[in-house]
Image (cartoon, rainbow, N blue to C red; front, side, top):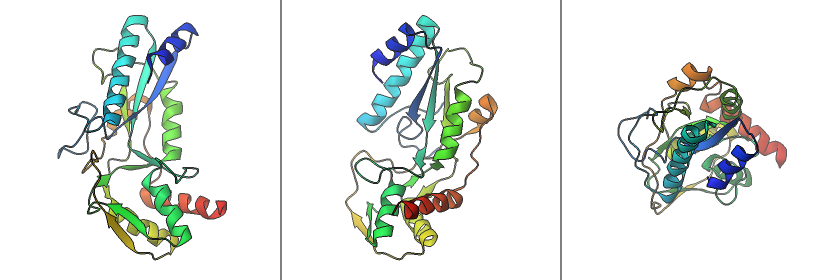
Length: 219
């Protein structure tokens, strides 16, 4: 987040800023999963550093100017309308390749895990966070909430699940592991439930089915 965004919000009389942070990369690699909001912060990539730095900007503006700021630490968001090109998520990439009958590429051994959260659940979390009551700010974590499912799913299990959902069968090819990729990730979600009454409504099977239906309809 650029400081100019918060300056613009302050100058324009915006009451609240809800920021899309990350529930994986701000915490880094740790065996203590799922991560609560208070977990150690040690990003392993520049992307993670930028997300965490943005949260400190939010906390500073809350203290200096009384701006209402919320950081939603998303897990791995997926669902309809996600572009399967460029920096898109693995679900949309795998789905696009399955529809085309092409092999799925897995980086590393495929045992790395992620917490996959459906886009409709994320959208609902944003609406609730935009209107909930605000706690005081004494720490960067005070106005942060994880948005995920608290469930770890490996990339290989995700590939298997998508193949089952689609009814397709394609090879899985392995490529070298990528630098800065987390080995495991999942987030604890109790704070969002307590703070603004949110919890996920879609499990992975239901979310993958809805996503595959959209991919086929778009074809």
